[in-house]
Length: 363
Length: 112
Image (cartoon, rainbow over all chains, first blue to last red):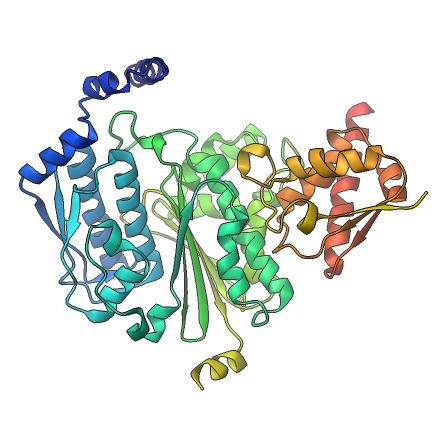
């Protein structure tokens, strides 16, 4: 811990004096140009992509997270190249695809080297269309060879954006697309919920570097969120992901609520199964509790309101190992902890679209 | 005196989001300081048009309007007398008043 603090201080001083290069050398990080030369001369590690990019099914989730851990260790830890083999992949869901894109984008931002992660084309045409549509092929340096006019229906309506801080403008393309389709109040509830998830990310997700799996002082340099929306089978899915410390860790450090209340919630969660999911639930329900700064802490309520107020759809909040699910039609929640952590937080809303509009689209 | 009027969508942003300046480009704190406080300081009634934005998160509304009491020293009574709203969403106005009244209640408790 002491070593890291010293590193941070030194890094700040060096940056101010324009000596970042010296700092990078001290940290063992080569310059972008040197790294590019290095990454092209070192043999790439072959990594097989999973058959399914999904976070809700345990086996596939474990495989996806295992692959991302391997890529992260190789690229950040060893600063050596990786080659992602997409041939085995046949299905891509928003949550898994979003988590993958977030990791690759973050590694590019941190290293500044686009040569370190390369890939081949998948065999499945729809998978290739998805990878092209959400910009993964482009960030991995592959030509976009599929004609957007030929995209499958369930690919055409994917939308992808990333940013920092609460950025209402970034939500506009998603929300305005459903103006006149969703009721005005649902439209603004969706906007409010997404924006509050962005605020949670801006205020809490990157308070400090993750304590596991960090490589020097690199981690806090990327404070982004990544967002996908997808329309499929008459349902709109919107997912927002960050690669921060996760809700369980940020809850433990919050100062918005009385310390004794937080401590008791943490103690209770530790004693029971599904610890991370219970802590997500605690965070969601905290708005009912008086805050130290009483005007704050209502964000999760609005994240939930996207489905709660209208009585349809469902919400999933995944953070670290935990998954908190809320179904509006049967207003109960379910809690589940997985074996693998997603190393961050992903909020996903699924809202049914009115049937009338789907008929219009098909005709 | 004629009532002054302002539109959040036209005079501030169609994309209000966040509480503090550090949260993003168009947060409640900035709206309050740049728009609401100067207009209220001119005296008289103020009509705030809430239409035309994509939405309003509670963080934005609380900081913009609750902050008038908590940070800027306006009393809830004064605001009830002078502030009027135009909105297509009837719940929005009551939500704003709940933030103003809650901020006033907290002030009262602290001064008691």
